[in-house]
Length: 557
Image (tube, rainbow, N blue to C red):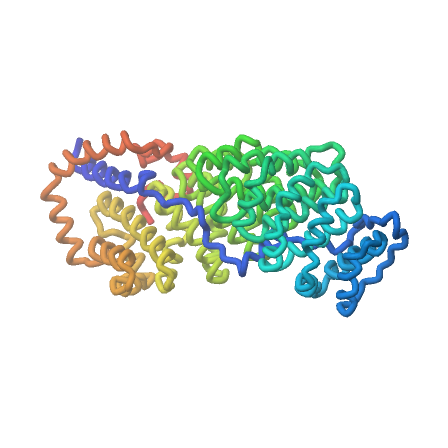
């Protein structure tokens, strides 16, 4: 082996060690999307029954005439007294009128009703199996109270309604069954404590699944039971997976239906269940939902696109094999229009998915490159708002950090280095770290070219031309230890010219020692890591060079 070949092999060996999976980017399980006060989930957490959209109105046998009359707050004391009457007709009518009061769309007087202390009476009515009318009206009242704030929900939960509603899931009356599912959905959406309280009820998941799968259940019942089931899977800390995993095949079946709300709630349910370790992710994959999730990306409504992106994003936070299951579809083709979506939320979610793919193996990074999406992401870094720029930056920096030489050259040709340098003026520690790491990787490739040509590292000149040296030097004084150490390392190893020439002399003096160490390092890498992309040879054939759009001289920027 010639001196030149030894130098090249040693450089490649050093590069290879730095691109092993153990040093690759951690996937972003908790991505950076921050929405105001969980707005995206509000419609899932609590729902009020306003008696609209074809709601069936029940009539008491003793009170046939039902009108649209809604009593005023001044009438409440009289209605409360009438609920306690010995006359059944009066009780029925007063209970129904109170229900109408708290079912109005604007400012329902829930607090005023609670202050009357009549709710325990409605809890008693809820258990009157011989009076379905009172059961139904009481369940509606309680369900709407549970749709309010935490204090209102807490009041009725403390009355012991959860086990009662669980029992009512066995009832044959469709209206009472629907309201029971509705109430449990509202309670489970209030807080994690109540979610766990419901999950602790006897066979609650089985009961809800039976309601959904019962051939006699109408669409309204199925929708409410499914929404409740979805709410029981959400929240942090996550519910015990063994308690909720039975919901996966149910959701997997309902996403095939043509009913919009069933698809949305089921997809959100799958997004909760796919968030976690590889076991959770694998259970969702085995349900065969990936093609349907990818298909949902084509839908026009963000209401289904958002949870579908969340499911796919969760899956690609898993291991390399799980990520590959997503990449076996045409997901990248579907993501291209979504990163240009008119809604920032869709752009951010799409970038999050892509960033976890580029945090994977080099063959997975290559698939992202081949899709043609990289130039569009660079454009986003140049023209979008700060939040979107950061999400796009994650995608590109992950690709550089874990990529092989050809891939890094491609990223540089797409002006990624310029954008990383631009981001050095930002204050966020995480974004500074990933940009500095990407710049360091590009400099490493420049060092390989310097070895081949015997000239200076061309990336150093590129950084100087882009006014990046000043930005890196400033970060040496950064208050964060990780940032100032990383910036200092880049400065000392690459940008401080006096230090660089001294280091080169040292390298020449220790060639034999480096050759000896490299064999051990290669064996160590081979035993510990599997890059899945034939990383032992970074000099690919001309076909791949042309596919990547790089020059025949691979290291020429």
